[in-house]
Length: 239
Image (cartoon, rainbow, N blue to C red; front, side):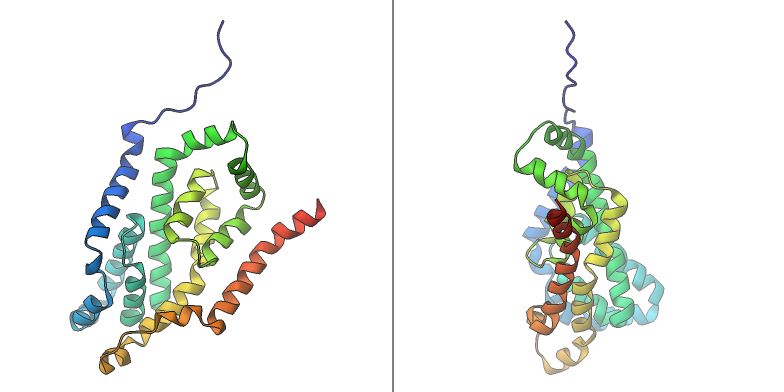
């Protein structure tokens, strides 16, 4: 007799190659993580300013490309990169360039994970029950709200928020939309800090990165989290 059960998709080296490259790059980045530091930015600030003044467009494109690589390969230094964006391009242009680079990098790792693991894991979760299936069902019913929450809640690591949606089969357009707008509050805050680095360098100090957790900053972000969760809560009460 022939079985009607379709076997789960098999892993192949070709499909896993993108994830293997990301894992290797992340390991090398962890080893050389000290290269991405505030001191490195301070030591090279004059060269960076000269590069920007010499060719603004090239500097902007180079910055976005570098940010894509940092996010796509999960390299350390995204925070320093965001500060650099504010330092070089100011609040508005720096935030837009950072949002563009971070979103494109996140989309790259999303596609790599979906290509390498998404179909196989999704097929297994569709055939299984338990907590994972409940998370999957909740995510599919309230995809935009869940994705916004993953971006807005400071406790969720950026790498996890990039990778997990691909494994639960979310739509790429929703993922890209919520990534761009979900990381906007934090990006604006740290770009703002970066825009004031000239004075910090002049005083020989380091920036106060704890500003993100001050109530006047964290409060509105938590309010956005509550607003994102509202559709989920309403559906729960209706049931």
